[in-house]
Image 1 (tube, rainbow, N blue to C red):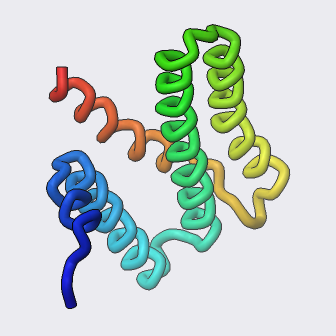
Image 2 (cartoon, helix red, strand yellow):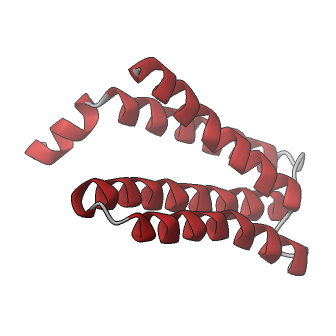
Length: 126
């Protein structure tokens, strides 16, 4: 099996390797804790919901910065910033209205755990 050129470039990026290894370690830890009945299924679904929305927020942040540098339109940047705030609020509303399916604590832990690597990677790149 041969690696494509895109796969080789993907694994040469240090940020990608650190992010993928951290995510895989967290998922293995959550799987073990679920199998040992230490945490509930709703904790896992809350964690996955939070992780998805945090990464969507990061994607829209990068998109808004690229859009601002290309078009120099501050209204698009403000729109994307408000949209990012919505990406942080929506999972909390979902977990409050559906506590049977999503745990608020899993959501909070997902937000904190997924923000920390981005803070360290940004501080190392400066």
